Every structure is written in structure tokens, then in C-alpha cells.
Image (cartoon, rainbow, N blue to C red; front, top):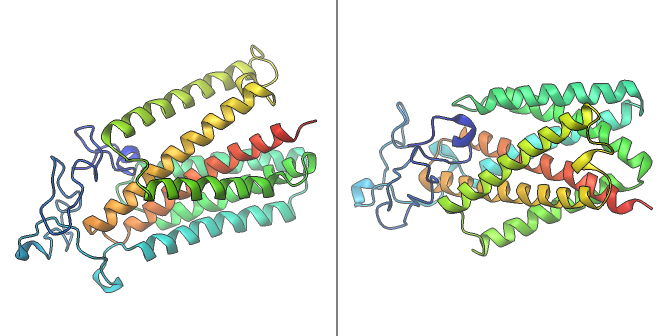
Length: 292
């Protein structure tokens, strides 16, 4: 059964602190193993709760990718929804870059857009079902934020946003390659350790922000534009790559388990948030290495 915490269940955590899809990875041609049952088999009203292959002695097996008419999530669904959310981010960023000149007003608008995007993301994270309007709204406001800050970085470090985009694509591509090659196994222990590091990082960054705001830590503290800031930035990008592996695992298991098609929106939502995280950190890192 999936976690009662929607934030963690989006990434596949189970009630027993295991990782859904690892403890019960569906086995083609045989029953599921481990203690975790099909997370979609116990949902009320789900027409796919009873695995259609159970009559052949393959209860909770991993059926081949179903056609679109079955209502199950497919890789095409994930790609399409991801293209919509990332496309919305891109359009918002391009419009903000083109229409909002660099100024204190546009900077304030960027902060406001980031806060609205954060609220929408939190609302969606704590909902049990995907709401496309919330996800696309998050993407639009996030796009405005990215467009403004990218323009600001570009004015000071020409070409930094383009390099950050290439860097983000490189990190995502390399992570996918390593994941598909089996060099990284998303196990329960891997997920627990990674989440502990990620939570600790966020807490430390929040404390650092407060220290900087109250003047205790100067020059950005841990987020300075010097060597220390570069080290922190690299760590943040590695954490983003970790979240990508969880996203890939959730997508892979969702398709194998026969998740409802609307789950593709949650997969796109998770991928978009992770890629935005990596892009912002990559933008800072490019700026640091571009300094004279």
C-alpha cells in the first residue's frame, strides 16, 4: 500500500518505509515478490484492480504495455504530459524574458511567481489525485520565475542560461543512461539514504538563508559565488539527479503495475520539479565558473 503522505507517495514510498516497486517489483510471467502488493490493485473503483492476467496464473504480473484504449498509463502518456508541463514552463520563461525588462519590479514579480508556484506545487503534492490545472498552473508560474532570473543572469554572465540548459540536459541524459544500464539500483536503502541527505540539505539551506537575511552570514554564506558555493551547487545537482532516479523508478513501476492513465500527470509533475531544481542550480554553477 502506498504512503499516506502524498509528498512521499508521489515518489513511490510505501507504508512500511520500503520503496514501492522495489519490494514488489512485478515479475513478468510470475507473481510479485516481496511484501509490497500492487499499489493500484486496492484502489476502490479502479477497473484494473483485478489484473487481467490473473486468470492465467500471473497475479500482479507485469503485462506488456497496454494500448491507449485500456486507460492504463503508458510511456507515451508520460512523454506527452511531460512535454505539456515542460512546454508550459518554456513558454512562460520566454514570455517573461521578452516582456519583462530587468528591474526591481520584475525581480519582485519573479519572487511572487515562485511563491505562487510553490503553493500550487504543495497543494498538488498533498492531493491524492492529479489535477492538471494545478500542475500546468505551477508550470506557468515557474516559467515566469525562470524567465526573469535567466534574463538577469544573462545580463551579467552572457550565455549562462543557454549553458545551464545544456548542463541540465546532460545531467538528465546521463542519469537516465546510468539508470537504464543498471549501474544504479533504486532500492529501499538507496531511497532512504538519499532522502535523508536531501532533507538535511534543504534544512541547512533554509538556516543559511535566515542567517544571510539577518546579516549573520555575509556574501551569501554557503550560497556564495566562490568555491564553497560551487561545492554546494554541485551537491545540489547530485541531489537533483537522485530525485530523477526516483522519478524514473516510479514511472517504470507505474507502467508495469498498470497504473491509471491520470498517474502520468503526477509523473510529469515530478519530472518537471526535478528538472527545474537542476536548472536553477546549474545556472548558479555556470555563473560561479564564469566569474573573472
